[in-house]
Image (cartoon, rainbow, N blue to C red; front, side, top):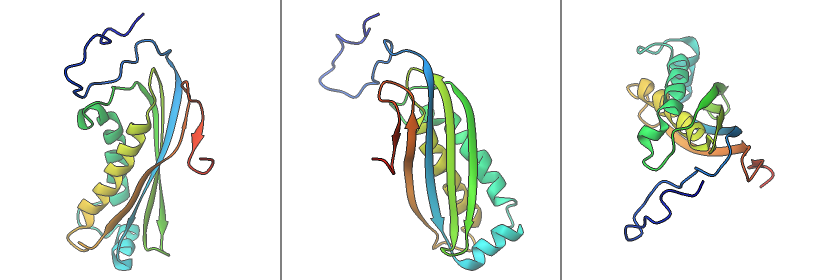
Length: 161
């Protein structure tokens, strides 16, 4: 089947890339994010002493919701059939802060890289929101794709280049 939008070019305006001719295959993506904070803030997160509740539990739900809502937030992002989302947190007393790693699986014509990165962003933004009353100096340092798999381009990882 040919691209139904191949004839459409309204003066170079933005448009979604047609994925009609791509096969539906298993695809995956891993993204990470980091938020730094004061040691006292991290201690309150770990001990469950934040007034808004379980910070990492709520951040996990925000990440999952963010992955599912990615095409609503990123204008040219295709909806992707997600088949799994996992969210892991590493409390880093040496920073101090929290590292977030999100793994997203899908079966579709395009990959879930944006879903993984949106999920990681939603997690660290939620941590910021829940702790901002005690620490407005928190810093979100990184949101990055770590690896992707599947599709025509196959495997890619940040470590391998």
